[in-house]
Length: 170
Image (cartoon, rainbow, N blue to C red; front, side):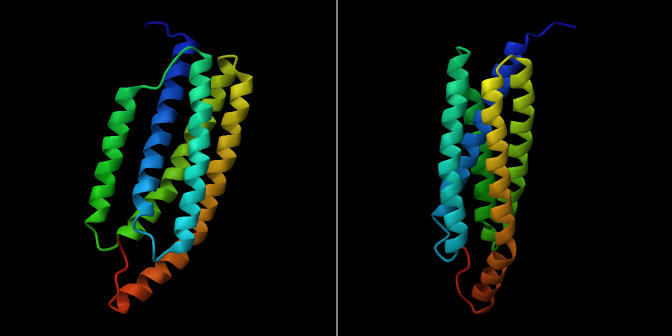
């Protein structure tokens, strides 16, 4: 079995996490255009978009710090995957609810990625960067909690609009 350097593993983990964040930001931006009937949900997504931009900047600094750059291929593939997911949800009557569920699950994917990245950074001797990844875990946990708090009220609004014959989705 071939030996792999910790630096190679770390660079790959940084690129993977950056691609994950980039995909998440694109999904947030696509969803925001159809949430005029859900102002609380839109506000949470706007706040998290700003947080995500900060996380992307931290990941970029970490990549620069090791002389690496983002993977264009990984970002393209994850962007296409995100676009397909959004397109599938857009055809559903309950698009807003499906996006809400996916966003909730996505937060936990990001939490796991950052927890793992912090361990890899520590092993790579990048303790200063590991602390910023632990901060990202806290940011993603907060976002997951905010989205969790929206599930019932967004569902109620969706039902009210739909049952009254109104337009509930974008």
